[in-house]
Image: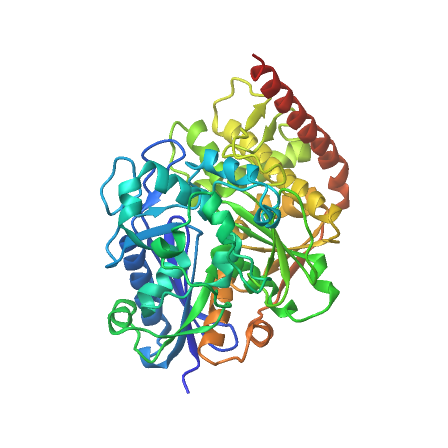
Length: 530
C-alpha cells in the first residue's frame, strides 16, 4: 500500500508543497510564487487560477525532487490563508475588484475593505459574536461578503459558489462542495459545537439570507482529515499525481501549523493548556487549546475542532509581524527590497551592535506595532502604529536599531496577547513556534526573553506542511485519525529558555509599551472631539 503523502500550503505570496512519509519525515519541498494585487488602501486581491497553477507547479517539483512515484502518493491535503474565492455556477471567476478584470476573484485574508460591515456584525449583539471574542474582524468572511453584496451587486448576483481558499483547493482537486470544519467555524460563524451549525437568523440580519445558495454551502461541515474522494483526472494531471490519491478535508494555514507543532498532544490531558502555538510569518497567529470552552474577549473563538480534534481553541494574532519588519526595511532604505539576504545582514549587524550596547541598543526608540490594526488583544482594525524616539540617523546602522526595536515591539505585542489569554484561565508557559520567524535569530531570542516563556522550535523543517500532511494521512487511511497521526508523525524540537538577565530591561520596555497605548488612546480621543 502506498504510504507517501503530499501536502500543499498556500500562503500570502507563494504556494509550497511537500512530500512526506508516514512517520512525518519530509522528503522534498518546492515553492512557486503567487501574485498579490493591492490597487488601493485596504484592498488586497488574488487570482485563484494563479494560485491553483502555483499549487500544481510546486507539487510536481516536490514530487520530482523526492523520487517518489506518483502512484505511491496515497493522500493529499491543502492548507491556505483564509481568503475568499468567488466563482459563478459554472466555475468561472467572478471579479471582486472595484476596478480590475474578472480574474481577480479572491479577497485576500489581510484585506480590510469591510471594516464598516464588521462593526455592524459586532453591533448586532448576536450570540455568534461571542465566539469571535466579542468583536467581528474585517478579516473574516461574513463582513467581506456583506461588502461584496452591497458594493458589487452585479458580481453577487453572478456568484454560484463561494469558498474559503482551502475549500476552493479541495473543490479543484475533487469537484466536491464539502467544506472544512476548520474554515467554516473559524471564519464563517459556523458553530461546530451545536447540532445545527449555521445561525440563519444572523445571516438574514446581515443581509445574507441568500448566502447558502450563492456560496453553495453545505449544512454540515467536514472534520479535518475527512476523505473527500479521489483526485479528478484534471487535478491529477495538474498536480503530477494519479486518481488513486485521496483528498482530505483541509485547514487554514496557521491551524495547520498548530497541528504540526502540537498534534502529539491531541487526545492528552491538561498539559495541552500550558502550550501555545505561534505560527509566525507575514502575520502571527497564536493558538491556545483547552478541554472546555474559554470565553476570552478580543481573541477569536472558542472554536471546537478547528486544529486539534475534540479540543477548543482560542486564537489571537498580529495582523503584521514579519510584514512589519519588511515595511521597516522598505521605508528606511528608500524602497529597498526586504529580501532574506537583507534581513540576514540586519540581524548580523544587530548582533555586532549589541556587543557594545547590549539590550540597551536604541533604548530610547519605542514602537507600537499596529501598522495594520490590532487583531488582538484590542480587536481594533483601525489602530495605527507608533514610533517614538527617531533621530536624523539615516544610515544602515540606523535601520538596524529601528529593526531591533520593532522586533522588541512585536514580542511585546505577543506578551500582550498572552496575558489576556492567561487571564481567562490558561496557564501558558511554552511557545511552540512554526513559520518563517524560526529563521530570524533576533525574533527567536526576543520571543523567549520578552514573554518569559520557554520556546520550542520544531525539528520539522516546515511544521505547517507537516500538519497538512497529518490531515492527508488520515484521509488516505495511512493513520486512523488525527490523534494517531499527530503522535506518529511528530518530529520533536529544541527547547529554548528565557534569559533571566534580560527580564529587567524588557519589563521596562513593557511599561513603556503600555504607556504608549494609553497615549495613543488619549490622542485619538482628542481628535474625536467635535
